[in-house]
Length: 262
Image 1 (cartoon, rainbow, N blue to C red):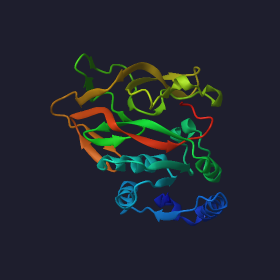
Image 2 (cartoon, rainbow, N blue to C red):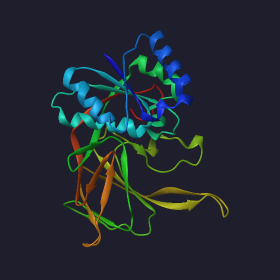
Image 3 (cartoon, rainbow, N blue to C red):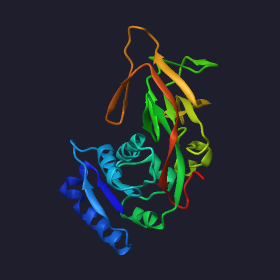
């Protein structure tokens, strides 16, 4: 059965026409399902947990922001058996995930959902909580270590721990390349350090790749003992030390034909 999770901001009247178009299109394609409207009191993670408690093989489609899509996928951590398939219809906001997975904005993604090209992808976990895409860290507050090496970020503007994301900021639409993407199918996570660079003397600053490290297990801690380090992961606030690793669970997601991953 299909479940459509509507992001909380879609309650605004200006989105009603788009919602009507999406509902009409999924009906034409024969993939209508139950609509669940998210609120501040009902998160995507809670909604998916409720679905998985009563159905073994659902298809969950998030309509809205990629942050909500990430939260929905994280719900599978509490279930030993996972045959849930996730889809995403991006609305309003630019989405790295949607660009990588070849998911058009709005109603056009309904056709991608109906074609059901499904791939299985890796997930990361932080202190036991799952993440699908990436999270950023303050460069002046952390050090990272594995059993074999340590990283003390110096002269970089951003640190990203990534499972699926662009490794650096694109300069133009033509810059899209598979080499830009952290692959969620290589059984590795990535640490990416970025530095700011101008395209010209008066050009706009953008983040460019500085260093790239691959890992399966890492610890992240505050650089100073008296300095608290917190990570906001979805709706959860996690305090350092942070243990980050490749999760044993994988997720099944619907993708487009021209995606930037295999």
